[in-house]
Length: 81
Image (cartoon, rainbow, N blue to C red):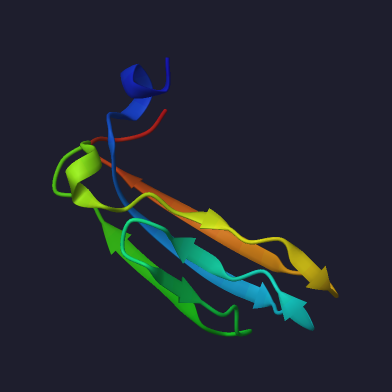
C-alpha cells in the first residue's frame, strides 16, 4: 500500500534530537557499525535499490539510561500522497 503512494524508499535522514545518558546507538549489523546518538547530529544513508546487498539494514539499540528522541525523513522515488 505504501509503495503505491510514493514508491520505494531511496534514502533515510535520521536526526538526533535528544541523546540518552547510555545506550541507544543506531546499528548497522551487516557493516559492523554503531553510531552514538548525539543531539544536533544526523545520519544519512541511501539505497541504490531495495535489495539486502545494499547492507543498509539498521536498528536502534536499547536505551539503557535516559531518553532518545529522533526525527526521521524518508525520501521516496516519487511524490508521497
